[in-house]
Structures are given as C-alpha cells and as structure tokens.
Image (cartoon, rainbow, N blue to C red; front, side, top):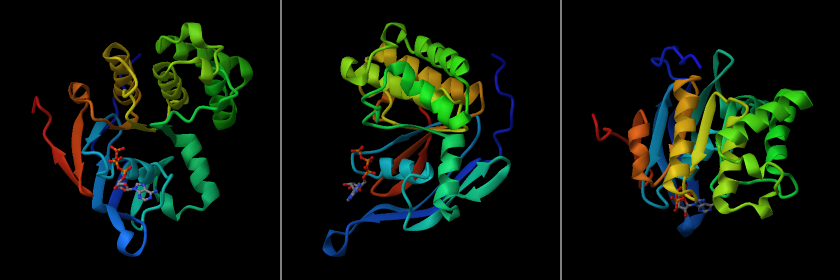
Length: 243
Ligand SMILES: Nc1ncnc2c1ncn2[C@@H]1O[C@H](COP(=O)(O)OP(=O)(O)OP(=O)(O)O)[C@@H](O)[C@H]1O
C-alpha cells in the first residue's frame, strides 16, 4: 500500500472548550472542564489518565455519541468543518456512519450475528456495498486480525480477546476518517495487542485517518505520534518518551 502523503498541518477534528458534567445538585461532578484538542489526519493519538478522569467521556463527545454541556466539536465532513453537535440527529447519524469508527470497551457486538456478519452488515448498511464485496472485505479484515477460523462463530462462542478483535475489525473495515478506540488492547495478550495497535497506526499512517486511542497500556507509546494525559477533567499534551 502507498503511504498516505497528505498534510497534517490542518486539524480535521477539533474539540473546543468542552465541558461535561454528570448528575445534579450535590451529586454533580465535572468529567471535563474546558478541554480543547485538535486531531490531525494521518496521526495516531494516545489518551491516558487515571480511572474516572474523563477519557471515555471525551471520546464519546468527539465521536458524536454524547453531547457536551458547552463547547463545540468541529469535524471535517467532506471538506467542510461542521459542528457535530449543531447537526440534526439525522445528519449526525449520517456523518457518524460515513466517517467514524468506534471500538467500545464492551465490544457491543450483535449476539445473533457471526463474526463475518458483524463486519458485512457495516459495509452493507454504511456504504451500500454489495454482498460479494462485503464478504470479500470482511474476510480480508478478519484474516488480518488472525480470526480466519472464527468467521462463522457468534459472540457467545468467542473468547474475550476474539470478540475484541471482531469489534476492531468492524470499526476498521469501512476505512473511517476518524477512529475512536476505547482500551482496544485490554483483553489481548501483547502479541495480539501489538497487531491491533499496528492496524490502528496503519489506518493513520497509510490511509490518513485520525486515530484517537484511550489506553492504560504504556507499551502502546512507541506506536503513537502524540500523547495526551487527562486528569481531573483537564487535558495536557505530554512529550513522547523518545522526544
Ligand atoms: N453516565 C454517568 N453518570 C454519572 N457519572 C458518570 C457517568 N459516566 C461517567 N461518569 C463519571 O464521570 C467521570 C469520568 O468518567 P469516564 O468514564 O469518562 O472516565 P474514564 O477516564 O474513561 O474512566 P476509566 O478509565 O475507568 O474507563 C467519572 O467520575 C465517572 O464516574
């Protein structure tokens, strides 16, 4: 594959002054306090921070799944920066389907579908791919993830690590512009964890996707371009160990 050769000087996703609180009255607590962040095409970004520091909240807001109390999410939608949270629900859904891939902590697989069908359905619904094309691309992705022997298994027949890889394949198979991954390697041994991180890095470096990955795993650091630390609702860019 020819490496992606685009510019990384213009962000394609901007979170601007994001604030998000949960609860009411005395139970009210801030998960994000005025967080701003720019993501660039072709970059893989790691987001770390203690448990409960707001990482999943930030991922959900930037991906259009959770509305911020205040602030904006500006995302490149076919050449125009648009405020994701100013879109109608239908527009946002269409934008998310077309441009974003999300790897959830809990996998979110359909219990009744086989591994192969989980990927095929995304291609058929999201892109209108025909059955033969969807089958070919789903199989290719499952092979890359070492799931050749598991294509016809449903989630209940798969181990935690296998389910996680199916969820990763489902997010990557449609080649999204934005990839959001919440602890993508948590259920994997390092051999498989490294495969997954390499796939995410390839999505950025080979195809120009913006990849934002939440993880506690320091072994991921050498694979990323940018590293942020979130603590107590505040975001700080940190140097990479090799900087
Ligand atoms: N739906 C909710 N209702 C109330 N509080 C919430 C909700 N979701 C998250 N929180 C709280 O907001 C804070 C940030 O949560 P979040 O899940 O974003 O953190 P995190 O950094 O992803 O944590 P972890 O690493 O444990 O997954 C935490 O204090 C959490 O308890």
